[in-house]
Length: 477
Figure: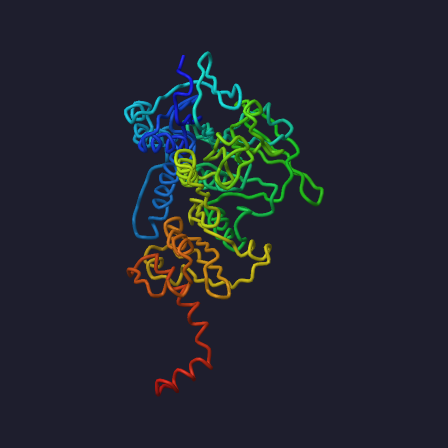
């Protein structure tokens, strides 16, 4: 039995958010216990960011090899599913020690493996053990949300939690969901030898993004060979003698069937809070099960906070780390820190990547925010030309004063390039100020300055030009 009231922080969940809280807490002098049901590292390390990016890297190499003939090169060989999985696991193995129980115990964190439940408003139980702490942090992550489609429960399928351990060929992979996870896996598996079909009830891919930006991603995947059936209602899923069959009902009432060898369900995420007995802790939730939190990430119990996927609404590792810092400041030092919601960058890591921060054009219109839009094509950037990565563009949303409200980039390395706009927004910079920053030539980052140049050129009206010529005695035409 653990001594009661013996911890400053009790962290429930050993994913990205929980580990940052635990390590940060002991580093700041707190006594911390971390409870994890399975293994430290969470979704990102084992079934999310790390394995998906490792697989996308392999797929990109295969794709480059297939394009080699256009460069006068010759490359032979086909991807081996077992070797693909072996490489993915090797990357996990390299990162895993950083999240190991041994490392966190060495830091001073008490680690307990087991299922935590609230016994009352200030007590946690794990089996026969009881823990009381000054503050609790719910960092239990999320899991795949499985839609209630007839026949799905009786049909074998992959999710992000199982797809990366696959060692066999997937000749005909059908993917439910055209969001970031579905599209990344679609492109990766298509390039690694599968014939992929993506199905979604939405009429367009990446519904959170502007259609003109998402169109670049869809065109690239279609060029790879991925097939899309969008705006479809799925009426039934069944197992066949050779794989699976998905029955669709079109918006016009017609029906069709899609056959494949395997099925991947990528239809969103669901928070892992249902086993915590939150009612006993007087922690309230919305009707959809999401925790009710204030902007300081505190629940309806003043001693219980949440961060990471359990807190939402952004299911990103970088947001989990940000929220963990907010929770530390509020639980240990009562600083009243608020979580960032205006400047949150993200990226879909397809080829091309699609990254965004702040408002999209569609959101600005929906919210009736007065705005202007400026774009610049990736094809006009010299480094994009040398690398053969000319697909895409940048779009910046500003207000009438020139302040940046949002930016989106679709193209090579968009996930890296977007950070300049995240910083500019955080510092309340105007778009025109980016023209004064020297960008290395030739780099893709020059697109950030070029769009700012475009904005400034619109301010040089014929009248402004005449006034400048008069004031400074300029003699040009």
